[in-house]
Length: 518
Image (cartoon, rainbow, N blue to C red; front, side, top):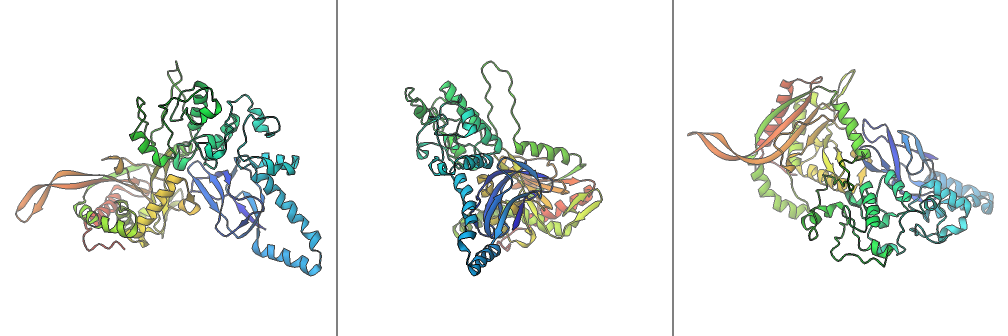
């Protein structure tokens, strides 16, 4: 039997929470098939199966938090399965040896009937009545007739708002929407299902605010935080007609910007997805905004990072040639590759080349000294709805501009949909922070410890600058980009930081028609 352990998703991550099992006992699993969704204080990631075989046992239930390297599941490998099949055939005892297989398949049948419940609750149902499992609906009414739902969690929520009895395809939400264990617990406390809630998080993920806003909507009959009174509310209470002007909630975070651009008549425009909205109860002058797991992780990481003495180096980069090169190449590139060509891969490429000349920045800091790294693994900071994550582009120096652009586009797309891979995190040696797309001109970045360097790329703005020509100095309008390098002063000094940033600047200013994209 192969043991599956809780992976370490990042250098500073010591534990993980089981968010959702993507396979159930008895399921056949191929190598690298997504097995389980793990939630940490930094990120949600799907963990692939380390072997091919059959999932025999889940050792840690959904919602449980365990340290790294804890055994969480048992997989019977393909070789073991083949051996177990061959042995009874030779002994002629097939009927007696196949019985355990049938018993092994019973729990998955019971569990499949209730995908929204924790394994512990599923096990209770299976032990109580295995025969009742096929009849249990996937999203039963929270307060239906006695016997329609015997789960303890549902019984405890008898005082919660009545849930609709319509079938799932008539509900506005997604029954398989992603959410943290805390949000899943909150749904159970109110007798709700994921299909009733329209998630506003990345990839349609349901947040705590989505649930509380929905509950408030049902209580007051007025839309709160984007939840519509129509649809679900109308099904729950037919006698209360839905207002004709009720806005429909966005289907996912990807449509949030479009929804905010066209708010309902008389409604206040929705806040950008990166800025959470805050609702104040009537008569309240203040309200506590609970910390998400990601925000807690960011707070801990930033507190740790600021223990490192920071030094900063700033330079202006004349990106006239880079802008002209990209403008000329981007249309043909997009037609050929199907994706846009941003400035980020150029800055990552420039950083990778500069790190070769300044190896003390391609390193991690430890109390024992500076640990220099052979591989250049550059993290690219990505803003998500509820925080900031830094997935890693590995061996960045070995990739072309096209290769970097594909890798960055891929990880940014998965960031929006919450579909990270285990390999996206950990092992970073340097970070590029693209704050300029928000219009910033000067940001003082905080190190992504234990890395010892981080560089920002600010907004490209046209400015009057003095340009030397054979006929003398002239004033010209040039596209200029500020870049700020954050330095761990324990590992390097300002002179070393200036040398690294100078090399990044020189590479970017040398881009021209002869620069290869592939």
